[in-house]
Amino acid sequence: MVGSMPRIREVRLRNFKSFGQKTTVIKLDSGFTVLTGPNGSGKSNIIDAILFGLGELSAKKLRAERLTKLVRNGARKAEVVIQFDNSDRSIPIDSKIITISREIDRNGESVFRLNGRRIQRFELLNLLSVAGIGPSGSNIVAQGTITHLTTISPNERRKILEDIIGISQYDAQKAEAEEKLRRADAALKDALGRSEEIRRRLWELERERNDLLRYRLIDKEYR
Image (cartoon, rainbow, N blue to C red; front, side, top):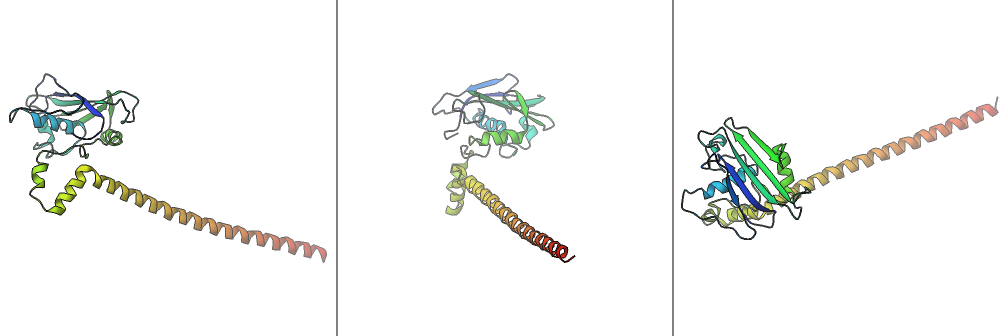
């Protein structure tokens, strides 16, 4: 995890992949943190848990056959809780500590919570995106990405690096904003056109009214 996003203070896991019924608490200090251990000790599962908690839906990205496989054998559901330091209010909630959680049961149904309150996934993603946080955000570099970069063409490498540092995301947002601006300009031109048409019609009605008044005055004088 890299970048100046709100710091993850703590990750709690229960029945997620290789983690058991007893809640595992992983505290992360400020600064640079390294997870070490032999192969198969569960380091990658911790990263998978963070991605899962942030709303990732792809079982492949979580290195699972399907999402229900994230639930430990014999358990009814798995849970991941992520606690953020929100002292700078990067996440637009007036709280120094933000806690998000996600549960998944054997049917593959997920429940998301924010500070204990149940919310929809899209609400969570929208809120976290304000602070540049997300399962596909530029602050997360998946396992194997660096090795993969050495085996592909320069153009493919540039595209992946743009995704990693967030350029493609901003390009997409820029394109979306430009499209909204184009539609707004078209709507404004249409509204101005209708306004001009209404103005002409009012002028015509005013002229017809004046002509009618003159006709009545002339008709009255000759009677």
